[in-house]
Image (cartoon, rainbow, N blue to C red; front, side, top):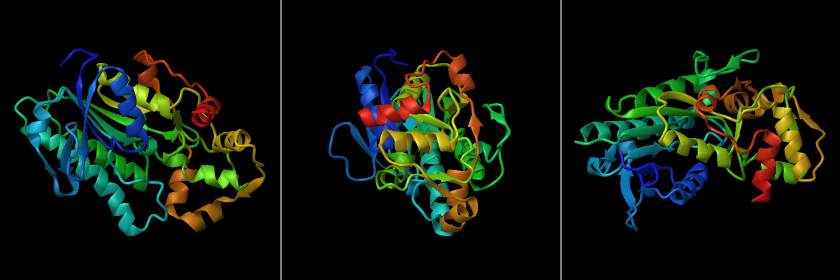
Length: 301
């Protein structure tokens, strides 16, 4: 691999919410970033691929030191119809398999593959403290994550594979997208009891943790969540406070499920007290230690 400050990194999902922040941080570190795009490349640092058709120039994999895969259909798009559930699964598995199989065809594959994943692997576990040692949960999203991570491990044996199990990324985008406008118009709400744990991480720390893993020796699943667990009530209450809006509404669980179906259960009502055990043990230092700090940072930008 090239020096830690001069890697060539291939990134899918570079134009997304997390991808834009990650590319900014990577380039600030002195790395060269090649962006995978689905349209015709217009710049020298772009390369074409069509993951749904498993199409990519595997030769590009011989020119980079590492691959970071952030592709996948948004889980924030509601409702989750049967067709969209298939897209959530296929978009993750197809992109990951395309990259892993292309690495296998390269004469000199990349040394590192950081592949997107999610804490949804653990499922609804209200009473549990969840680390990377915890088993798979039950339901749609745990099954999606299992297939997603299995696809990543199709990469060559010599490639270090890390599956980055990400929580709710706090910022002006991503999973926070629907919460912010509702709060701004005075419709900030507690969902169900509000006592369910939402595994969160600031946008800055999400990208910084990925950068850390790029030159770490860790492999396998790594939880990318903040160091201080927070309940959903704590998250939505502070968001309302930060935007100077009232916080009095309560949406009972049956209404959340009735309006949003499986998406309401998986995104708003599931409780996952996830701990970033391996990341902390590996020496990563968080910039934002509480969800309040993460929310404040998002709106100070």
